[in-house]
Image (tube, rainbow, N blue to C red):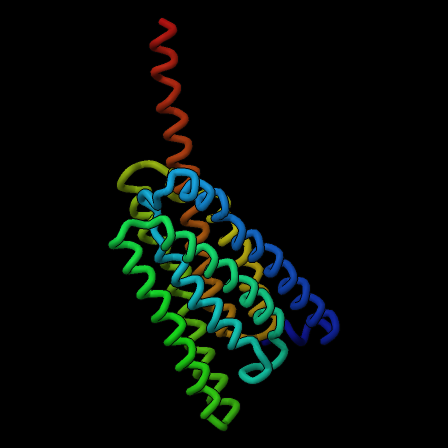
Length: 237
């Protein structure tokens, strides 16, 4: 990369660390953003139309990305491991709450998916340790982390479709979309500074999808506000 030759290695590393720290901060915002949703689920004792699939994807992504960032798989990516380890704890908590308050069909489906996720991750971690060549191990887990990141960022596409179909942003929380955009943009920069395509490629896609979610939110939120003004004017007349 030509950029690396334009600044000193120390400055370049400082940019990378700054982007990584920003990514950690925004990721924490992403992790806590579903709390209002789960407060509503607990209060109403129902998961309503909320989907638990994005949290399943997020858990798998956090586990694999945490594994990718550890020294056994890649160099100088501990910020990736720490933030995804914390994220895994949050996602597991949300999934357990969802299962507790879901109907029988969703409860069975989510429980089966949760067990499958842990089983799959155990197989991946064990199998990767059997690969003695570090570069091959790095590539294998790198491709997996990239694929799960893309899956995680793509999972809200179903919610975006619901927003378009219902013309309502009720089931697409604003702060979740904003946090996704900010986190993916930060790790996009981190991946670029770290010259790591397994980080900057999926987060680049996440940035684009985050922009799409925010665009939908503002478009349909504005339409909702405009729609609520007309009856008020008519009632006053």
